[in-house]
Image (cartoon, rainbow over all chains, first blue to last red; front, side, top):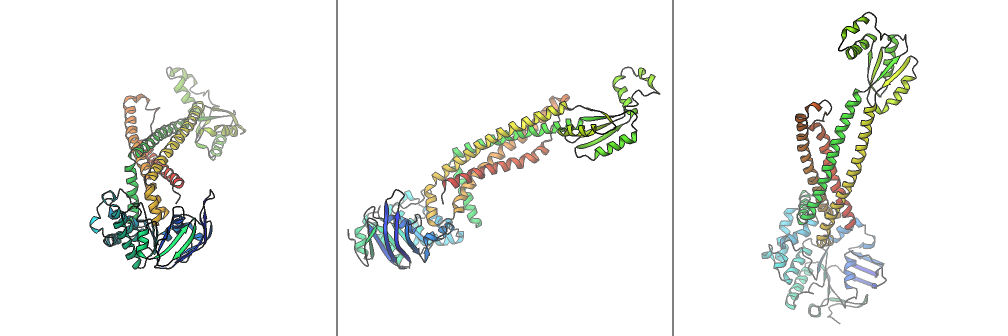
Length: 226
Length: 302
């Protein structure tokens, strides 16, 4: 599903964020990517979202070579990838329902389907009752659930989560990770970039460890090795 | 694009305008000022052209023939000249008519003095052609051509007024074009600024849209809606004001300066706005669209 072959990403100032990594992630896998700040984790997410182009190497997702992808096909590709971030990135002037519906609106889903899909997704993340609330009226955990609902409402093949529990307390973090597991169990490939040792150790999933732009560890059912 | 999506994009465009109320208003005001000035110049230029045309139509070239030239020959010359594109109308005035009109002018107060010439037309050799032109600016060519005809003795023309009016009309047109161009540039700049602010306010939303997989057209549509709406409102208001004012002014001139009515013949409001309305609206939409497209291309690297 996700194949990286000798990927190098250097910035124009000469700094190398990723210095030649190869990786293979199967469909339906749950993978943690761990590592210190500056290890290249977020750059990897940006490469997968096609926000950045690799300097060298081949990056394939669902069989598509991202380097050869035409500009006009990028939106279609991104629709198959859901993403959540540490800072939630919700639209503050719209309520919960509108935030989730926004993702469907963007990909031109008919209104009657939006009206069906959004409540279903809010039920999945446990926020059906709070559909009228605005982000400022929600706790951090609830906001991340809204972000998750938004990421999932378009039924993506892959879910990318960049520090999804970074701003949350341990209890809420566990709830969010439980949700991610449920989503993974439904067949979505989940990639989680995190610093959270407890979560990585609890879930016992595949862990890819990065350091200075290189993969220094890739173990199945591993724990967090600092 | 689905109807609901078009509706959504329009709604977002209007929301953008509401969010940047102050800048949107400033853009609309500049646009309104620009279209208002354009409208004024347009009215002035159109009326001036109308006036010039009327004067031109009244200006005639008079062609006199050599002594002894037959009337048939003169009529044949007239027929030949009529085939020229710059000629609107040719009137043949025979010797008797010439003498009659001369009497009307010069013996108006003492008609008895003219009776002495009752059987002897002193202007017997003054049958002539009066040529009215479509475009006075082509007069010189025509005069040169007429002078090259053998039977023609003399050509009189009175084109000073027309030439002066044409020259002044050209000057007014040039100045108008310059001022309008400057105002249009200012309008484009302000609309561009408003849209740029809208883009910066919605930066986060745009980033999210991109990540979710929104097409470029979906991201750009609200900003284009914003630009066009500002353009439409900014054009409609001054055009309506101008329509009202023009009507009032020609009514006022007709009532207060009745004696000038033969000289100052204004174009009817409907005839003028039949052209000005679509041009003004197209300008508004065009500037709005250009300003927003230009800014979206510059600021939205999607």
